[in-house]
Image (tube, rainbow over all chains, first blue to last red):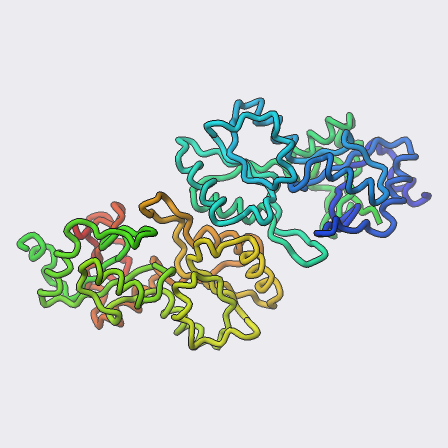
Length: 239
Length: 239
């Protein structure tokens, strides 16, 4: 606690990644990373505001939170910023009716969205849903639009599961970008707008926020000048 | 004949695209483009050397030629330059053992290639073979290599079938390039090496060659300064 106390001086909010920080995903639901359940519990006992920020686009917030709770984490649905609800907001604001190329696990997040006569395509980490037929269908929808709009929930290259590396949505985003000659709009990390949404939901300014991520490249000393939260928020590991 | 005679003055060889010039492909085998059977017959009656140059990577040369012969074209296997046999040559020359992500229709072109313990990945227009599982397998092979080598048979964005537009191998090439952080080697049009191979097989120099393609952007007046055959070969429509 002493080390954390020093590191978090002047910080009001903590933004935590989920995959690779709280747990490693897998077909069996994944496994918590040793020490992370206790670390989250300690943070919750402090006066710090805590928010979880993920790019996971295969699961609804409800399913993700349920999975983490079963692993022992103190986490609730309202504490999670995830790309599917953020995308739903954008679709409503802009009057967009998506053709959805997404995993069934996240479909409930789009229950309130009109998907008739689509005027855009939304892709997420669809996993096995990235069949040739589904990709071709999304491609044809885009090519039929006068101004094709492609929204991608994150742009990850790949992620790690217990079975090995898995292609992420970014690869399929690139495929559609190339085929259609367009550029996708990305909802998710590392987009500054996405971090701003998480900060807004937490009610804390960027310069008062400590981000905790998984990648070695995100260590505090290296990333601080890059203002990854759209402000001066800092980054550190949870370990 | 008069118009052709004038246009082909000084030309010794003619390089013809296949898809979109001889026929439009489709699940039913496609249909010949009106007038193209007769045009090829006229060329064959002239003193010009004729070679067919395709990016089709779903079919073996034997199958492609059989299909065109049934449509009435005067064409033989030895007159066709296609990316699969060209890739086989490259694999043999460089001692590469490929993991193949290709259509079953073209697999026979790789019968003589050692595919054990792969040290590269070869992708072609695999159609329905571009499942998430197959793409992920190719991705993992690449990520396991110290120096990942990805060879793509063409880099087309899409092509047209009677049922509509179809995603081509280029989109999936881009997906793997992005996921692995690499650049693919392309065997097929518009690579200059590929045109040079076709010219070598025809035994005619680039400046003596007339190319006949489908795209409006390849009209003679527009393309001539670009030297698309790796020399001064000219381009024109067959219509």
